[in-house]
Length: 242
Image (cartoon, rainbow, N blue to C red; front, side):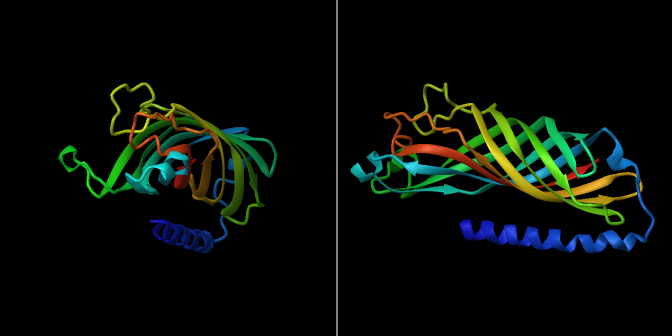
């Protein structure tokens, strides 16, 4: 799965590098010349993400032979967000997303030596972890000078997240992980502004790193007790209309 993710990232990078060429096909007319001088402006953001969990094995994994291999599988989700941009000066902005919903489906794949086939297990068993996350990212954006109807920027910031679908309090979770509801982390990325007569279109590619250990380890759960720390990792490609 990792090589497929790398191919997708390379494809997105090629697309982003080629996009500036289209900015100059509009001629020399300057669209929305006062857009970047506004103190505050808003946008709607829609994106697709690739998400997985980075994890470490618990010492119990080496002590028992029922689970031979544990792998985290990449999965695709979507993002829907409302952007608020605060202009500081010509090159710096502060951006926040007061309403940001992230839908993901991360998964762990287990290679079992003694699968419980009557119980629905197989030699290779996948356990999916649904996520509906309410996120609040705050970012500092550094922009280049505007060239005609094109501008490039970089951004970095932090975020806090609340997973509406986390199952930390679920009592009967024999086949599931127990996950914490709150997470926090950092993210960074690159984007491009394309100025059209009535709106600004912004494709962006960013990576996110969760810093909180999301795993609520339970010795009584077969699929949980072999894993120690679990951290979220996300790559997102999005389009914003401002």
